[in-house]
Image 1 (cartoon, rainbow, N blue to C red):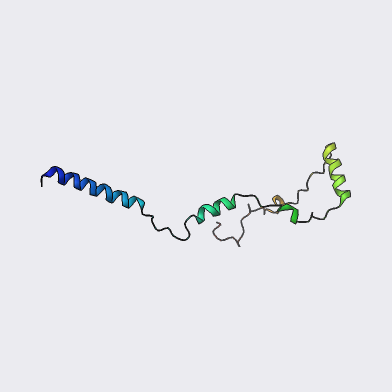
Image 2: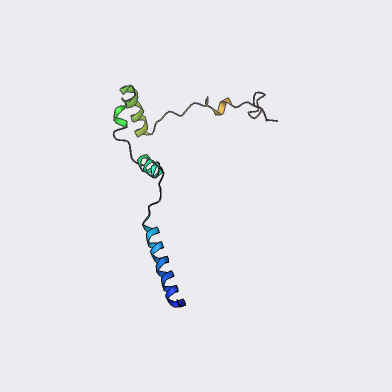
Length: 101
């Protein structure tokens, strides 16, 4: 047998082998695609999430007074007794805070 028919036969055998291998389906894990589906589900807005919560209790008179003060520009300034007033005179250093000099 000459080398040309042998080369053609080898090329045909290789082509058939590659074609058959391309038809085989790889095994996919049972959880394949779960991450994608979870990411898509997390991007969806929950249906009627705010409607299930009741409105917080409030006093209509206080809200009206606050709205009037806001619209007229006469709001009450916040008191100074807040978080800034709670800082100690030693710069906030405390013996209960480890790692502070």
